[in-house]
Image (tube, rainbow, N blue to C red):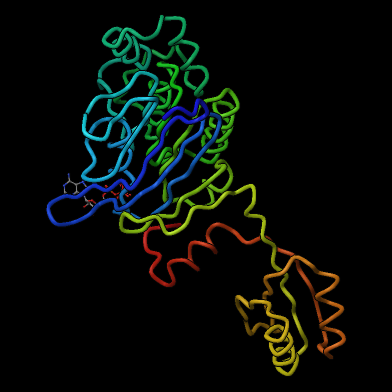
Length: 308
Ligand SMILES: Nc1ncnc2c1ncn2[C@@H]1O[C@H](COP(=O)(O)OP(=O)(O)OP(=O)(O)O)[C@@H](O)[C@H]1O
């Protein structure tokens, strides 16, 4: 991998447990300064992929390069990787600072001042002497992030990172991720929380049963739709006929007081002019943006279990 902008490159990666594939035929590029989301329901293969990319397990097929290290067949963690596990573990009877000191000593990575600074950065008090066993889930999660940041990673992996965080924690966490990306860190976030990833990622991959269904660049995913409410069923029929003729997709219809139809178009004035000319009586018009959630549901149909 000679491209200096790339933190990781995967080609055709698969992982098989017995006869079952947890990850299949996966291509992925992670660039420094970018946040990439990996979205899928439980069992989609998120943790399996992170384990391969952090050198904790090997791939069954394909090629994995992370921070210029070939991890395809070897289990070893290259320097510069930070990892926040889904359920970070600590020594329960030690304080947050002592836990980090212990880890820093083992891995020879950070000074005491660095540790205090990192704790402050994630919203924990370095002077807090309470044992970690008294911490809430959200505080443990913050400490997990601090542990990963303490090593000043160039590539950071987060597995379901906002597990247990309260709303304020989630907002702060999002800001932290954006700051890290702005400082050049490549961030890979696996989650099943679509709305959360939508706000922080540059790109997302939708995965299901180990396969990537689609990769979306969120800077380009600005597709707008127009919700048009009409006066009655006849107008809905006229609108449908017009949309079919114009080649515009209708994504849903509801039968509330004013039947409402959603059109996949961003050209509102033009669309309305056409509809009026076609004799459709319009009650209301709303412009909306298609969410990741909608896209995920479109991709997976009704089988969207585990994703919210
Ligand atoms: N060590 C293992 N041995 C056998 N099968 C495994 C092993 N690890 C994972 N799997 C299987 O691989 C598939 C993907 O699991 P994985 O934990 O990677 O999914 P995930 O997307 O992280 O799920 P979750 O959101 O529940 O954490 C699942 O079917 C799981 O049962």
